[in-house]
Image (cartoon, rainbow over the protein chains, first blue to last red):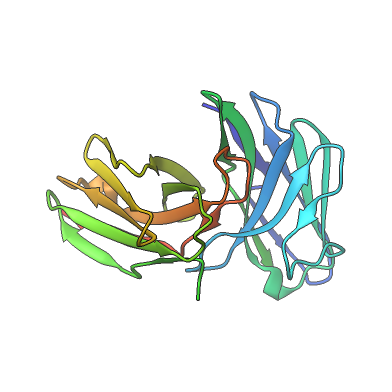
Length: 117
Length: 112
């Protein structure tokens, strides 16, 4: 099946710093990737849709200037949490669209656990 | 009202038992439906798609009732490895390229 990786898997940073998370499709090209966030005991919430070569589409309530998304190639999308604060501590998961049996299916990365001190 | 609502759980059932989860969705424009499983601190993984005619995959059976906007998942002969959180997921797309809307999940623990 399609494989998606994320790096880093875990990051701890000080308040005010910026953190970059990478999402890669390893064995397929993905024109569309999605970024989700999951707080403890809550559902995954879509933050933004990342399209290769164009600006990301953000969900309502997600600050585009705080969560910078760059989808510069067909296998890589990055999410940068700028000036991170403790309330940004969460599990960030990306997914990438792959065509499986003529149908688009989202394959998820293993997630990045961000802790902001 | 949440777009996708699930039994809050947790469900603690003995090994070998049958367990059923329910899910309702509020957007009647929803077109595609799925059950995902998520292990603790891991990413969600697709368990099965859900079709109007109902579908079965081994010990797992999924049902969809569009009129009631209701989805179910039945697990028969439960195994210890079935312990996980089960996520009900809907999307407005038939082509799989639109955003997925997740329920909060139902936690299942199978007891030896």
